[in-house]
Image 1 (tube, one colour):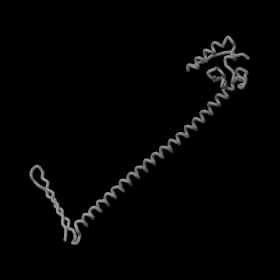
Image 2 (tube, one colour; image 1 turned 120 degrees about the vertical axis):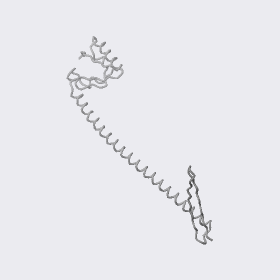
Image 3 (cartoon, rainbow, N blue to C red; image 1 turned 180 degrees about the vertical axis):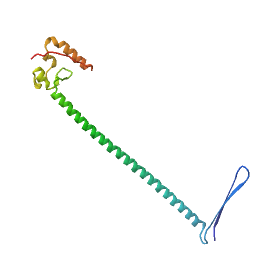
Image 4 (tube, one colour; image 1 turned 30 degrees about the vertical axis):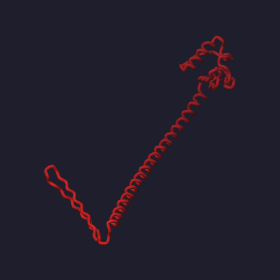
Length: 171
């Protein structure tokens, strides 16, 4: 027995006219309602699977694009980091050359006043070897009448203010 489905939809607008939509599906003889229902369900499941596959494909494409963007950013960051490191090395080499070959004496002391670093110019300016000055307390190398200004200088340096002082040393 053939199974037929008929659907009517009536819609009207505000002036009273109606639109009628009519759809008829004829099923071949020998096909039951259950077979037709199963067929429709299979079609719906296939459509849902296809929609899920498209959604998954879209997510995978989005993830791959995001990964490519992140990779590009990392490569750019690495290039910038390398160029920054190269620039810092060049600046360090230049600064080291200025310190090692300059005529100014620069002294770095610890909080106790012990000389931790002194530039090689100490040899020319004060006739003292770097090894002789390093590790000694700075105030002990200053003439007694200049010790007070040097102590003030050290306190000013500790307070992080600029400090400069001309002084004489003992030989």
